[in-house]
Image 1 (cartoon, rainbow, N blue to C red):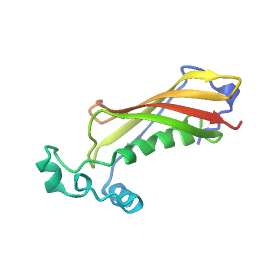
Image 2 (image 1 turned 135 degrees about the horizontal axis):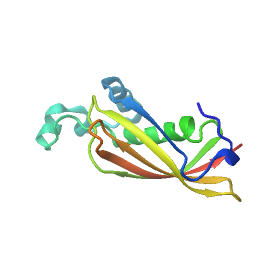
Image 3 (image 1 turned 30 degrees about the horizontal axis):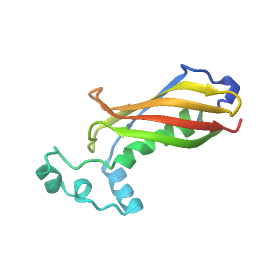
Length: 138
């Protein structure tokens, strides 16, 4: 876990990490969210809808923005205040995602930063983008 303090942060600072989507993640998210939509739970339904396989929950994918902020950029002193998320392409079980963030704005008076973030799959295709607002304790 990174422990950046506000004064150590600057516009242009970047961090990233990778994660592979697993069946366990899907079943755990289903239990946690109670989202039983067949697009996420039925292979047959997803294929009939035109997808190659069951589609990973969008909010499961977006949850990695929280990991980006709380662990990597800025880390320990982060207070997540808002995320404006867009979904560009579906994600499937077995995909390896690269979550990337870059500080695009820093507001000294309010100890706020904005992070421009994106998630790409193993084919380097952008599957999601976000603008994240983060406050800092330290």
